[in-house]
Image 1 (tube, helix red, strand yellow):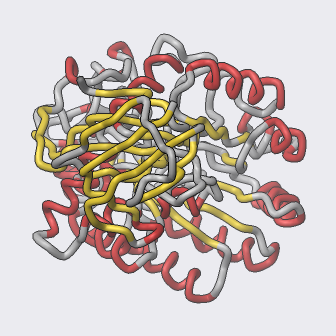
Image 2 (cartoon, helix red, strand yellow):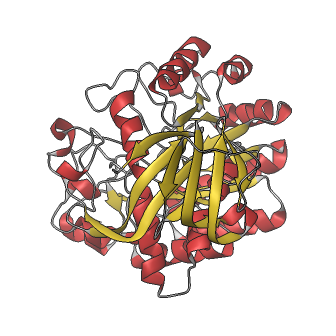
Image 3 (cartoon, helix red, strand yellow):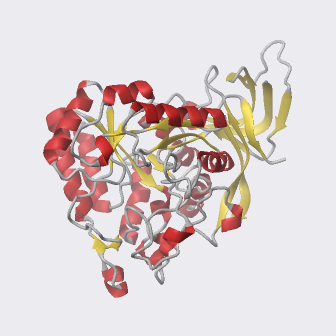
Length: 427
């Protein structure tokens, strides 16, 4: 298939491109930008007038719920949601059932995703067997099976001896460990940010120090082992200050933030809205503002959707009993564009797109996130001026729960191209 995308505004943060140019695709690769190659005859021409042509989005955390949780979502439904959202590469955590702690399970997931012929799926292997924090997994075998790093998902390793051994082993083989900083005991069982609002609502709290204590411990272990760590879903101003210092010190460190935390605060819980029950919890406005600042100064490397589809049976419950999580694949682009809108000119489109394309790809060392000649043709074509209403029937994902229900958001994806084939198109 030879594709010619014409008249679009090409924005590629990796190559610092921003201008109206044509893109030419053949054999799954970008063969030219600007001028057509000699003897190029397109099988299909896409007129992108009025659209932004960007690299396909890279999502650092999307739970696809297979294997084991097909009643919440399936690979088919969630990869189709990824196409609707312009996400062409996604990283999935290991907290499936069974846990991704054996190479056979990883190979099966990769194979099933490949059959779908939609987004590229990059699994994280479990750091410990069954995510129990007791015995290390066979990281070498999991890497051979296709894992790009190792994670505990939202499960904390309480035993720092085990964590130290895991980091030592990972450091020896240059594996990246993906961890969410959360103390195993402080805030255990909490469902909301510790503060006046949680007290008023009678909800058990998760204090900021649950994050900062975990960060202090982790940074000491990183100094001792030289391990490379990616911090998942930083949520507080105090935590970001520690990350900023650690990066200046030279620790091998990257971090991301969930798209929800770029916009919402604990006040958005309102009257016990279970859609706003997330992990980590939504924090104060001061924390939200610190997240936005940290995105601009490079302390935070990427925004992810933290896509966690939850079914009605686990969400339509009292706030404290509801399962945490929200659907996000189809919202990642729009929430990033909303950040640009809310900034009133202080955040450029290029800066924002960098956090969900090349910035995210760099974190995971993935060969994507850029529109370079010779690179795999993963693209997202979207209308930045169009707006859509977030409501359950508008979502392709099997998970229909998000705190943004009722919001009107900017940005509608018109086409998603994966490895040179048009995987999704609004006709």
